[in-house]
Length: 302
Image (tube, rainbow, N blue to C red; front, side, top):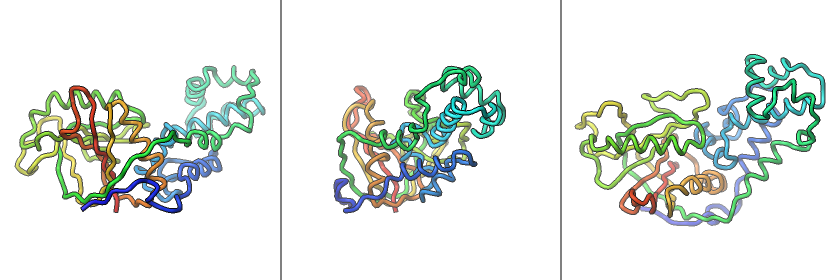
């Protein structure tokens, strides 16, 4: 059983902007110990789901935002005061002045010492992270319909990896590797493929700034009767309710639909998430040769 509806019918009174609430919290605690899990907890979301919302709205992960804002504040303090570079490095939570210098030069093109000799009005106090976030969360006119469905539990076999934000080329490369070996999977369901996003998987480990695990997979009929091909892994999609959105058009535009779902639609809905993977479903409506068609995006909800 499913019900279809549009965004403006989800709730007469939209929720407050979760991203701006998170940015306000970060701005007030830049000099303190911060991490994505803590920020998500303050907003009342799991780290994984809030990561998707934050990334979609601002185009960077929570960790990237915190690091960039700390470096920005360090640049402002360099220009406006005489605080030592070592103290600024500690404020930004870097383990050494050398690591701080490398990150600072990567962002601003100059070492902190050379930067201090310049007077740059662009780093004045009026330039705040909150102002930037407010500007970035203005979405273009876009609307997607949503339906609610219930699904039985399902197993899938595929190849996966952990990725940093905006890793479209790396995920495309994963699909190419997987498709070249997909014929090794026995009893797969004909004409179907899944792109599974999850917070963790026992066979994969996230490193450094990697914040998402993605698995290119085929759903299978009976997992317990299948020999797992070398280098592949198993994902279980739990039974339950899902909010389903349909992307229509070229595959290259899929990130726009995903960003709209997580950055605009879901934060203004009344959905409560389940701790389960979300996934893309590719079926006969998608043309793998032209990389065009319809793709359903499933978001687990209570």
